[in-house]
Image (cartoon, rainbow, N blue to C red; front, side):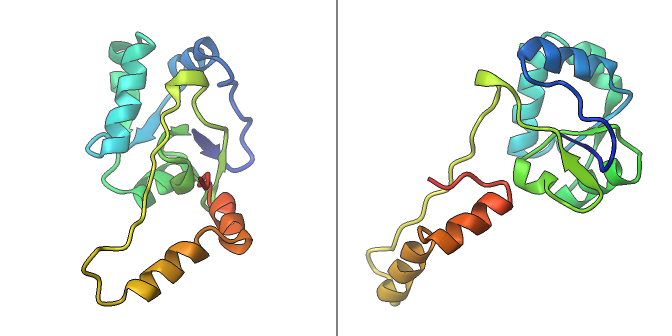
Length: 144
C-alpha cells in the first residue's frame, strides 16, 4: 500500500488495522483488471468489506496511472505490487499483514535448446550476486 509522499502512513500492521484503514479511506487506486489487482480484490473480500469500498475504488489501467493517481491526490491509497509503488510522488506504507500478503514469485531457467545457453546461465547467475540483490531490494523485490 502507498500514500502520497509526506502524508501520514496508515496503520496496516494487522488485518483489523488494514480493514479500518481501507474503510476510512476516501479513495483507493488499484488495477482490478490485472492478476495482482484481482488478488487485491480478494483481500477486500476476505476482510468482509468488498461492498463497502466498491465506490471508493479508482480503477487504473496501468501501474503508471496508479502511481499518478496517488501522487496527484486523485486517490488517497494505492494498493498494488510493492515494486510498482516505489515511485516518485508516493511513499510505501507497507505490505498487507500476515497471510493477506501474497508473494509473486518469478523464476528463470535456460531452455534446453537455447542457442545462447552460456549467456543465459551467466545472466541467471548474475541475478544472484550481491549487486543484483541490492538492486532488487531497492526496487521492492525480495530476492530468493
